[in-house]
Amino acid sequence: MRSGYGASDLTIGIAGETDFSVTVRRRLRTDPALRAALLGADEHRLPMVFQYNPLETYLETTADNEILCTITSTAVRNPRLRYNVGDEGRLIPFPVVAAHLGKAEKAEMRLPLLFLFGRTDSTISYLGAHLYPQDVEYGLYSGNPHAHLLESFCLSLHEQTDLEVRPVVHLQLRLGALPSASLATTCRDGILRHLASVSRDFAASLREDPSAGDLRVEVHDFGAGPFAGTAGKIKNSYLAGVR
Image 1 (cartoon, rainbow, N blue to C red):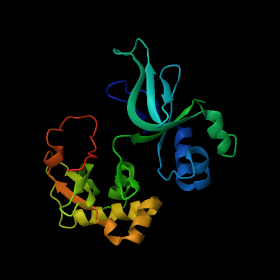
Image 2 (tube, rainbow, N blue to C red):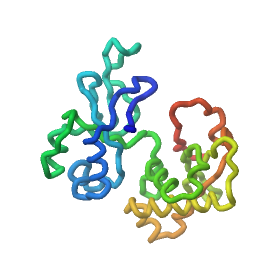
Image 3 (tube, one colour):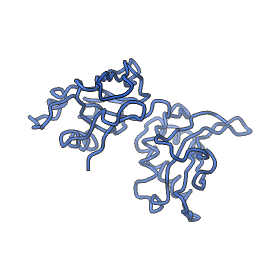
């Protein structure tokens, strides 16, 4: 099965994975030189990679790499002109990507590629480091024996009485799931381990001040806490405010 990229307020068929895009993503995971060449030397995140048809959906990016989408097809009820989807991404022509792979790649569709990082409004800034939901997700699900209990998560910043600010990861359990006593600790350890491995800024903060690793994990029943009233939503809303 291949993944697709769409938006409920646009169309579900903006872009899709192909054999070629899957090959590119696998190479990005293991080839730092390729990742630096395509995405920049300081980019550690692993994006989703899609191909899209610019004759059906015309994509652009802003100076901040936010995706702008133009759809004027009669197949959609509500045409959009340069609509800001709210996602961060990069657009790279097929020949450029193929050239950087170092060999003549065969592809059924020589279409431009979309490198998708996710929502631009879901990143938390903490002690000079950017905490990306995608990195939190990797930390939550990689090797976690409790991952099957999790429905979703969201992020927030909590200001303590001493005015220190700490990140909080809110976990929503699946409906009817019963958490084990070690769920929060296991999830916290996995998140910290992954963040320290992919973020030089976060790793530096830990070396300079071990208390920087005071990341909180709060577990909520399905539909409780910050997830109350979100049943039936198509998209998760990541919380980035200070409370």
